[in-house]
Image 1 (tube, one colour):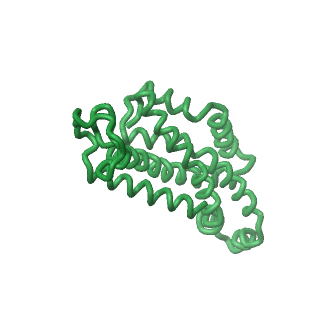
Image 2 (cartoon, helix red, strand yellow; image 1 turned 180 degrees about the vertical axis):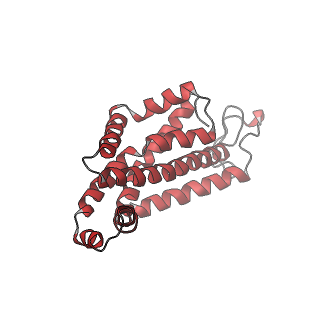
Image 3 (tube, one colour; image 1 turned 135 degrees about the vertical axis):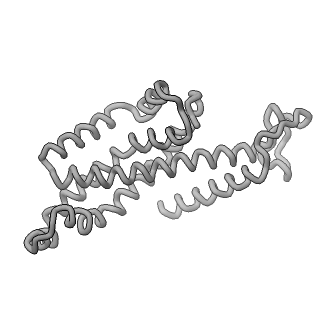
Length: 206
C-alpha cells in the first residue's frame, strides 16, 4: 500500500510539474482535437489546448486539496478519537461517537455538496470542509486502539507512578495509534480525490 501511494504521488507530482511548464490555457483553434504527439502526448481539446498541461494543472490542484484535507482529518482523528477512547462510556465519548455515527449515516459527497451549496467554494474552504468531514473513519479506529491500550500494563504502571492522564494519553497511547490511523486515511485517499473531482463536476470545486 505504501509503495503504491508513493508511486501515485510521484506520478501526480510529475504531472503537476508538467502542467506548470506547459501553458494549460493557451488556445490554438487551428490545432483542435489533435492526435497525441511528442509535443502533446495527450493530444488537444476542442479549443486546441494541450491536454497533458491541463491534466497536470488539474492534478496539482486536486492533490493540494486532498493532501491538506488528509492532514486536517488526521489531526482531528487523533485528537477526537483519543479523547473518545480515553473517556470510553463518558459524556465526551458519547458525543464524539454520536457525531461519528451521524457522519457515517449521510453519504460523504452529499454532505460536502450541501455545505458548498450554502457557502462560496474556494480552495481553502474545499480542504477545510473535506477535512472536517473525513475524520470520522480514522477517529473510530483511534478510539478502539486507545481503549485497547488504556488497560495495558505500562499504562497502569504510569498511573501508579503518578503520571497525569494527558501525559499518559499523548506520550504513551497516541504514538501507538499513529500508524493505524495514517494507514486508514491512505485507504481513504481515492475517495477524497473522487469528492474533489465531483465538486468540480457540480461547479462547486476550487
